[in-house]
Length: 104
Image 1 (spheres, rainbow, N blue to C red):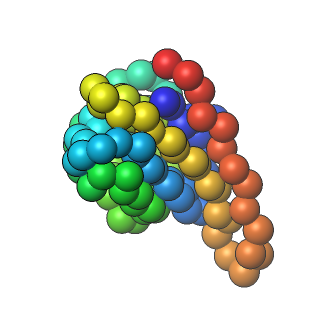
Image 2: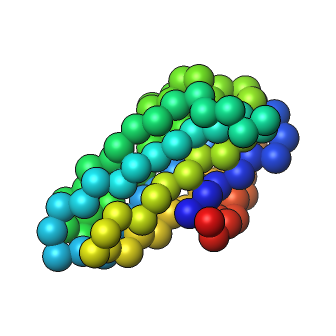
């Protein structure tokens, strides 16, 4: 699954990730800029039927701050995953928008 930020964004991008599995799963992650260049790679480990939420640049991938790009989560063998992207504006406005996931 791929989450895309189409414009330079100065708020926070939240990501929620879950796995449907009988055991622990390791989910490969690739973060790219808008040219497609890889700026970070990682593996997120989740327990059986686990979940994890984080802000993209603040909690996990600081290289993704203030740029356009994508974050890609590869489905591990023997599991299903779900990903939700949430855009949270900077400032006092407490609104948010979901970011659509794209099939790979």
